[in-house]
Length: 291
Image (cartoon, rainbow, N blue to C red; front, side, top):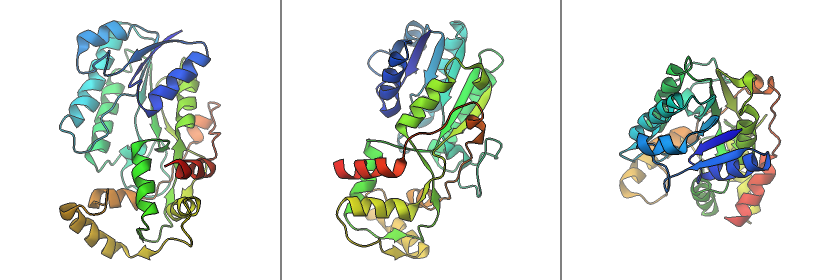
């Protein structure tokens, strides 16, 4: 089976290529060097495959081309897949489409995106669903991905500086390791049980935000548990910091995402035979030591 991967040079894409090749798939790479998802002519050459896995995305909330890449780019890939009679289209979305909704989020929970990135991902999902009568589609919604990338580097750097935790930290922060995201994608590739379906992808239980911060503190040699400040004080600081930019990442939008209850059901994908295997607490310890 021939599989094409967009965003093949990203955190997920690189590892996905290795795993697909190890499983015996013929792999086509689509990245910024050889394949522009905003250029349908180039896409048509690269995406002649049995399965297309669409991982490419703009992650920067402030990027002017956020919607162009995430929505129009996805539509271009879908159009190309339809022309090439692709047998399955797998889209890597995000649990961010649920926004700040409460309780355990299942695939039937109503989407309520808040940030521009989350809204772009939901719009892209709608484009994918528009094509489900033409191409067998699968949508995966991973939780925050744990891995060696710039996002986690910034989080760990802030914790190492000893900044206090805003709020109680008791909110559940269910994540998913990049290796588990890759294994979920491979599990769905060519799997008819996954056709026409949307799946949450996350670790099974998850830690609280406080546990995550204190785990990083301990592994980086900081003694004692993290200090905490009330949410109302943290909110004031976030608005001030938006102007003076002293504390990296601290903005009202970022604070909102930190305070969310990240609690997701993975019963649906588990029913197809996939299960997460990575111990995220142990992986977090390793990550804290190398960053």
